[in-house]
Figure (cartoon, rainbow, N blue to C red):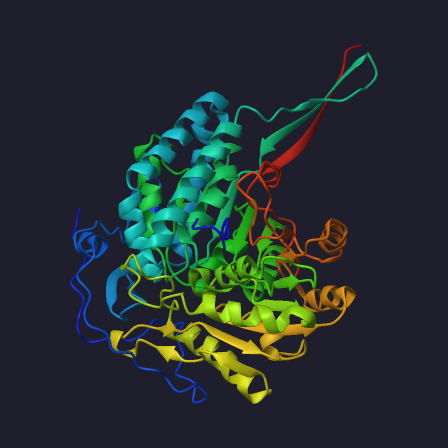
Length: 540
């Protein structure tokens, strides 16, 4: 998840990796017997890239970060974080539990009652800007680690994720002293004020697909409004979040303002969601997990819950759309960027039958340009799926397309088996119908479903034929059609004649199963981390 645009859009050495693949993490599953036949690839070894050389000498923090310093888990347990491109172990990360969550929340509460919430807006802004500058100075390091641990192409982590991470922190820093409270037009004998106060301690449960950027989307408004936080990174991608916390302290942000507790959902996420001293919980991830946080809140202290969940987003092309080559480029970027592991990916190409036969060959041509390869190679455009369980899920969805009668016109296989990693080639299914599993379930992989329609109203109806409502794209040369479709499609972000999520100044979030009550990015994000207070003074 991301300001995901159609344009290209950052102490101790790591352990040596073993030639033997370690046991998978506990969230993985056995390979499905229904997997499509794997496609092996043969290629001459490429020269080692600069990023690959750097990767061998990086500082990899592995302990939790509580109260301004790294600490082991209370139990002393660890778990392996694996490289999705090779299947090999990168490091052992602290496997935290409820006791560690208690320590982190206590540190955050102490920091909240300490200097951070009482600091002048100008000083808070200064420290946040310094934080952004430190991230920028370590961008190459952070991008490389994120590529190793997340399987993301180095061109994406360096030129998109890190750039936007820095921009987000700076945007919210600059807003700290520019959001005003209010006086209401009350009786002259009264001074009536409406003021914003920080909500307190915020728990953040982060996804694995954009670890740094999603941390920034939460941290920017949380810090700007004077709150403190406890971050739980996805267990697959913990290292860059830990490094971010280190840099925050180096920037001068007080100890305990940012805490990071690593581990698995039942051990860390649930205790954080149920914690009676957490005032708000911000979550980005699956709809299934989002539901759990609503239950945790209801069963504990009714903490505010902000959800940004999944999507099954439409890419609607009307009969009057022009420049089909550009449209095909947008369609390919939307579904293949980050390997399709993106909640705003337009995975349903809903195209008018009058131009479908002209557009589809162009989409296939553009799809072939998306090279699957070593994420550290700057020529790679699609990296690895995050873990074996997710690979199985993607391949099982591909298999369902075959079973239900869709036509696989490109790809459809696991690839790069010789790497030991978890790769899927770009895949396109034609003649998909709206009721098929391909058109209803969020696949979260490089799989595009093509659906035809005959009338604009039908295209809009198909676009809305999903319980999700995160994002959508509409292509048309008619301004009236653009406005009608943008209003009629139920989604939080509608891009017209482009694939985009807007920029840092525009809110991002969805309808329905895509989440509610929360928006990332923009000044609107500040409101959800504050409480409104009315102060009514009788002047006598």
